[in-house]
Length: 144
Figure 1 (cartoon, rainbow, N blue to C red):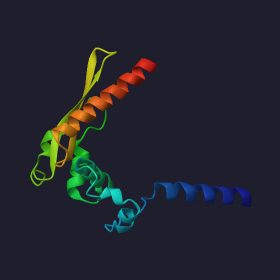
Figure 2 (cartoon, rainbow, N blue to C red; figure 1 turned 180 degrees about the horizontal axis):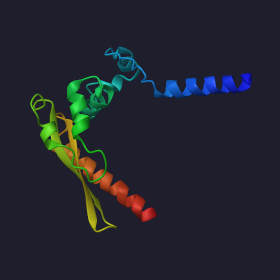
Figure 3 (cartoon, helix red, strand yellow; figure 1 turned 90 degrees about the vertical axis):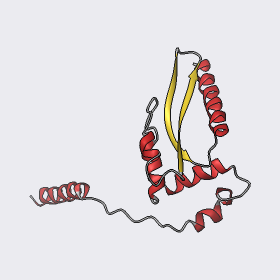
């Protein structure tokens, strides 16, 4: 009988601890250790678009503008995201909405997705990325 009570007690404890909401530990706004370990994140020699994307990834849940950029970007292929949210009030000097078009030569289609990117990303950056991503995708399709 004791064996069954111990089992039920352990089972109930595991089940209730899985249901109880976990406390999120606040993320530190101090990024000095990160920048010390990876100085290229803030180096003047790093492309401004890459710097902006790094900041987006590092701060996406701690700074409201970066969080909006993530929420208004695509969440899957052929998802246009939200141009309205990307260009909303408070974002006009921070981000730019653009579309990513991947041409797949082996299929009669193109994949179009919306991205909310840092203002430091230029049309030239996006054109380069579109071309390179399309080329890589086509290389994968050729191998299949």
